[in-house]
Image (cartoon, rainbow, N blue to C red):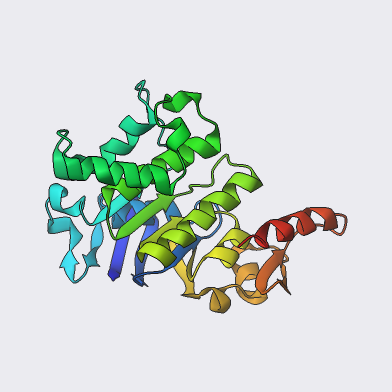
Length: 269
């Protein structure tokens, strides 16, 4: 379990994250949602120690992450940032091998290679493993980066907007993979996500942020409610239960086809 206690981040005199406290349950997908500028990515970056906090604590299994050595923390949490494009000319397999660095320090063992092979199989990247990363489509590239976090073999996986620049089909594929990681490997996944319908359909728990503060936190059914979301996003939102999922309708009256297309995609869950 991860306990976040009163973390705050200031840029100059402006508090971009203000006294945020939350709990992240093990073996679940927890989504951070909210409008632009709500502080979602900043919160995730502080929890993973990619960004220094100005106050507060983050406890991982009761231990303060800010006092743990980098080498040990990298065996407990893995992070996929929003901007993860490498300038290096490397293959898919070489990228995934980076996930083993906390253990091998660049000298891959038989165990490391076995875990790399397993991650490649899990993400169905066998036919691409010798291709260069820049030769892949957006969806294939994102699968490769997620395979790197799988090879790192941490219990906690943090993903900052992994659906960025992906079309609906590839977004669904990525979210289905994350659900498999939870179901089959008992991973704990924390994700920053903009699309509230993807959050509703694939999350277990949701933390909604607004103006750098936690507006509401709970199970997805506790958070995906008309009055809560309208307050957070400051717009009209209707919610319908479709195929067992709470779907937020915020399109105009002529957008029925768009909604239907989305719902059909969710039927694959």
